Length: 431
Ligand SMILES: Cc1cc2nc3c(=O)[nH]c(=O)nc-3n(C[C@H](O)[C@H](O)[C@H](O)COP(=O)(O)OP(=O)(O)OC[C@H]3O[C@@H](n4cnc5c(N)ncnc54)[C@H](O)[C@@H]3O)c2cc1C
Image 1 (cartoon, helix red, strand yellow):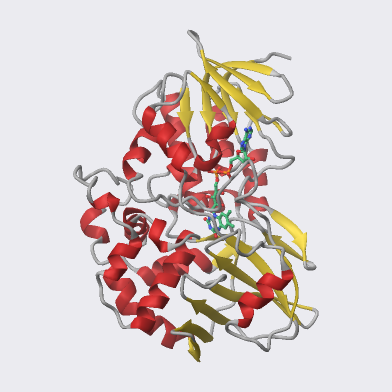
Image 2: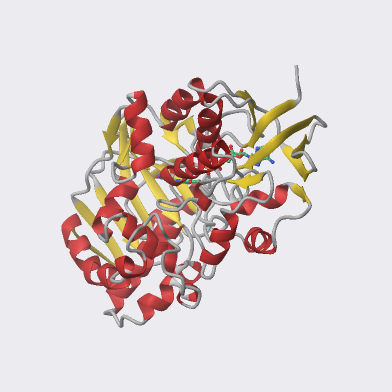
């Protein structure tokens, strides 16, 4: 068995598996080294609470061209989350109950105003650097933008809650340009963006797609293979694993999340901007948890401000007469995904009558191979993104957080894997 390949890919999430497939189909010898015992990275179907539940990435949409092309290619079936009819919203210390539409109408003015200029700055979502003078603008947070709107207090609180949900982080660390880029990818509509984020999912789970993609590659994929060093040499790269294996190649594609990049020692070190990005890390540090509530609950939204431990929840499944909600909060330390008491208290903010029986989730922020949930840029990081997308000799960085359009999503991971593979196939031409 040879230890020398054309390309080494580190990580078997959607970015790594996409790049490996593309390169192997073009005749390159490719080895994928994955630290975990499974494919999929931040997408993972685990059997919990009597159901196959998505611990990580879940929802997809036809607005997301790269993931939708893969769904079409492999004939993957789609299903829908139950459409909410009712809503409970917590603002100003009280809970209101109304229709889901009433809540959306309440959010509308603030969300529209927050995102009003998304198409002015990012008129072509796949060319985020089209306008050259974004550095000062990029320093703004989503919170700065909302504060300048002078919304009525309850609308202000709920809009801040929506952005804590979207960033899986407090809105004071949320980069405004990231929010505008997302909205531009959704053709300037926040409601379409919301639909894209939490409506349609893969009927047999994200593993149905990653498995189909992995089965369609001639690349070799090795699990249980954590990489701990990448050295650039005169002829290419030399990669070593924690268990002491050594591999060489002309090129390496590193698909680690930004917050996990420091898990690998790079020699020579990464560029100054890449190092700054890895040291600061991107914004998400929240929690996704599944919550089993006794009895049948009709589809509804639970929404609140960013200071709540959980800011959003919606029922996803009914099982044996009980209801399983999916819920999100901006701080994964404040609420652990598997802490029944903390989650029950957080849900009681809206519905003290709910009897929380059990919870399940994965601590992505504490996980050494992710250190983050879905990648969302902080203020000032758009400049770093441009640099992160640039190769250094035979070293290329790919992944959802380095995507151009739907960055942060499964779509962004596939897009980034495609671009990076294309660059290598074209012999270094710009991706
Ligand atoms: C809770 C949560 C909810 C989400 N919800 C959605 C959603 O609904 N819709 C959506 O589109 N997206 C969602 N996302 C985001 C989406 O899942 C990710 O953006 C996407 O899956 C990332 O793919 P990737 O290949 O870039 O990175 P990853 O999936 O993180 O892949 C990187 C791989 O590198 C491996 N690795 C790390 N370190 C090493 C090492 N040293 N050596 C070898 N291998 C290593 C990791 O194990 C991992 O497999 C969510 C993410 C989370 C966590």
